[in-house]
Amino acid sequence: MQEPPTEPHDVIIMGGGLAGLTLAMQLRDRFPDIDVLVLERRRHPVPLARHKVGESTVEIGAHYFAEVLGLREHLEKAQLRKFGFRFFFSEGRRDIENVVELGASRPLPMVSYQIDRGLFENFLAEEAQRRGVRFVDAAFIREATLAEGNGLHTVRWERRTDAAGAGGGEAGAAAEPEVHTTQARWLVDACGRAGLLKRQLGLAQDNPHGVHAVWFRVAKRIDVDSWCKDPAWRARTVTPTRWLSTNHMVGAGYWVWLIPLASGSHSVGIVADPRYHPLERMNTFERAMEWLAEFQPLVFDDLDPHRDKLQDFAFFRRFSYDCKQVFSADRWALAGEAGRFLDPFYSPGSDFIGIGNTYITELIARDRAGQPLAAHAQVYEQIFRSFYESTLALYVDQYGLFGSPTVLPVKIVWDYTYYWSVLAQLFVQDRLTDLATLAQLRDELALAQKLNVAVQALMRRWGEALSPADEAAANVPAVHDQAALPWFAELNRALHDRDDAAAFRGRLAAAVARLCTLAGEVQVRARAAGVESEELDALLASRTAQAAQASPAARATPVPGAVASALLFPPTRDARTPVPATEASAATA
Image 1 (cartoon, rainbow, N blue to C red):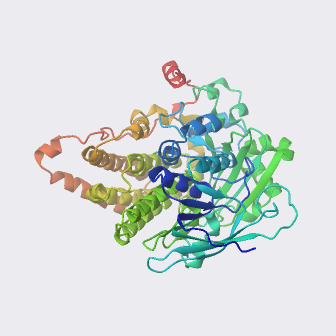
Image 2 (cartoon, rainbow, N blue to C red):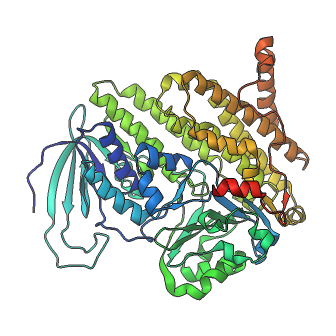
Image 3 (cartoon, rainbow, N blue to C red):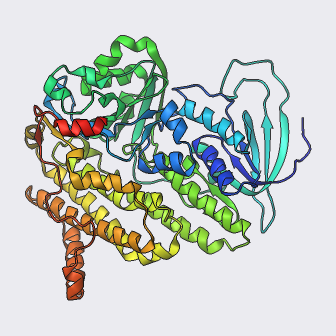
């Protein structure tokens, strides 16, 4: 049944998942009079626990949800506070107390969350409607036509009133769908991997990161803290809540995630490089369990008696991908996974939703103000791509390091420092669209990006140079406690700071100085294993030469926040040493 055309909207968002709903809310918060229509394929409410993956947030995503969108109350009451990332070098082991553990002994100041996606997206759909967004579920897009010039984009869609195929409930009696023709000035594709506009415009593009993932949810809690009764191991953290972390069980070429959900379920995933672990070894639940029994037996032991509690199972052969363009001056955009996707190792999915949505919102703001779009759409595209490529460098050809108790702890400290110092600061201080400040920081940001690429390559060669005997000797009962590094904990706390433009430029200059110091320390560690980096040598030498050309006063004045000591990595603390009582008191206060 063809419905008559409706009045045009300001924005149509195709896809009412995490990216689409948060964009709609961000637009309504920015422009109370904006008319936004969200068309979601699935019928609501969606199921809890087993709806989607992407359940772990980090600092940018958590800030976006809690502060930009004003959802902190829901996150605190309905979701779980995350106890950071945690890594165990536990391949083939059941004695978890006797392997290296990397993770904070106490929560760091910047809060992040474990998100039950079904619970969250049901709430977002309701909250978006309370804020004035028109939300239509069970809506199937038939056709999207982009207008030329200043015309309106057109979407033909149907709403099926039966439950069959709509993503929820039992199939009802077949009914003729209602077919609608709707127009809008802006059209945003937030359909996820289906990428309607991306396919239609030929924008899909591979990247060099060819890893795969399998995942499932179980209707039980996986309590990592119960895996060992050793009081010394338990005393490594101020509270027995390792289970609230995004736990990474790591080995060469793969990692296993364990993520708790507020609904009481647990999410389990295996992410692997096929050069080490082919997908065919884990592409069913039974095969995944066999694989876990061999490589991560503690996870297998926890799950094996509860196979009847399996809630779902899915996999992607190649989950990471790129896109040629996500923002257009022709008033269309791609949001979230409709554009690009990276890798879940550091949980950047919500980060890039927040970053991309912020750029889309700014472009729509310019359009509403009658300002030209072409130059800003191009600049935002370039900046967003640089963020994507810088983050992708953390993962490409790096999975071989994941089994290295020597190199991976160094890599994680570097990766966190790069993230908290640069990208996270740009986001939380609302500088993503401050083109004047970004232009003034162009050289510093370019150096940070080059340093990251060079350090990633150096760490890769360092890991390849280590023998199995070297790595076995390094996997001892030890904890690398990130919270015990004062400068590192301060980097996290500083995400609460707010600077004026001049202070922010000083902060970023200090961040790059810190990265140079840290890169030098990585170089020293790698050199001890006989590994050199001419590229990193050249970058650091150039930086030193620039400092030498500064005025005597400038050379004598330390950069605010710069690290004085070159020893930037946590010393290995004996696992039998409990967390000091003062730290425990501070963490529980």
